[in-house]
Image (tube, rainbow, N blue to C red; front, side):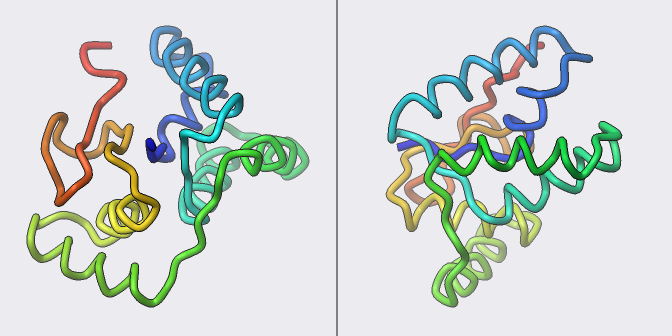
Length: 136
């Protein structure tokens, strides 16, 4: 199982970076076609914010994309995942919201998180960070 970070969803809809867009689009198509990917409510919140602020999308456009993304398994935060995120944050010296995504990934049984925001190849407990945009 793979957890998708917000940047995967953003690059999937933003064609200003063609190589990253193509890679993210491929990841998203694969995620929508099966049950091997997970996102969290946090990822959807962050996507909506970036889409409106940086990509200048309308609320209706954001709603349409959220409608598509909800076909991927979406996790809501639990008290346990928040507590686990605090442990992950302290252990690895990372930002709380990155730790919260790792905690969500861990709770879903994911072996990897696709992200460009964490150290590529590093293990954060049972979850390995993989940067699908490395070198792009």
